[in-house]
Length: 452
Ligand SMILES: [Zn+2]
Picture 1 (cartoon, rainbow, N blue to C red):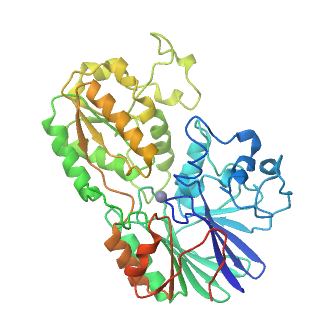
Picture 2 (tube, helix red, strand yellow):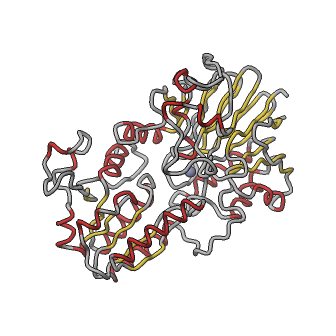
Picture 3 (spheres, rainbow, N blue to C red):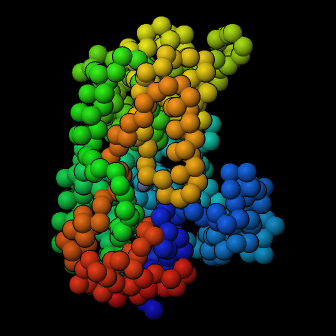
């Protein structure tokens, strides 16, 4: 086979995209993420792959492909796969979500990662935070829409799309046997929906042989009302105006559109948005991106200061990256004093802060997270509900998904009009054949599909 794509992840599952494109002597990996349900038969929150065993614990259950010249020497210690210098020329990253980046940390740092400029900024911010960045150690080659870059025998044209994290791209890839397209993750109902339409137009213009498309919400029966980011602003605003107590919410802190939406709702309702130090660190870094308009910590939004020791907020108790936020930060006592003055963002891990704040009953909680993709996610939702109930808060679902619903995936697939469609990042790849007259090839893990 001259030119082929092989899916090693995102096959019949949401997340975990790992798509190897081979063209003559060139090999590139399109995303290298961790799937939401990856290994859930073997691993759980309390049984996790051992970091010290690198790729070994993943190989055991076929959770990572045994590809030569991809992994670092470190990751292959204790495995039967022998280290070889890189045979994969590049990792091309669609966006900075863990289900697309999560396993890059195991790859050879000599393999460059191509990513959007905004992704590079988020990587820089996360490097210094607990948890770090999966791109650590790799050389980053950055791009923006309008650029084209070459890796060996292929040429890549990245085009921006709308998604729940800034700096998300789809790709048109010109191979030696014709063009192919990879969508990454996309939606139309965010603040930058027109970008996804730009992508469709550019991709259709290339007349691709193959389209690899995500389908997260294809066939999903989500009882929740469909909402765009605009409705998120107006509904949040209404709730903030009506409620007499504290309002808090938890959502993925890198969903910058959501931070901006809450900020705007707060401005109108006369409340102050309070974010965690981690989110604040990301917002500070993203000020450098002139194309994003991101709320500024200290000025537009306040930063929550957690107590580190009993009864003390001593400077010496905080990490270096936390220190800039101590001055002018907001404590549990500050929030307690003026509960209807705030909209507080708490990561789920920070829910125990409510015990310090001890808010009055009657406040409101906004559930603004991504859909629960699996049982674990559903369990987490239950847990949050228990906290909300314990403190006598009301529960409100105000959320715009990061992904397009079925009918809009259909619009994209038919708008691009590739000869062959390969569905990934979906629980229901089989439904694609009813959505398009293009030939649909269901990927099988590790089996090459011709791009000719
Ligand atoms: Zn994503």
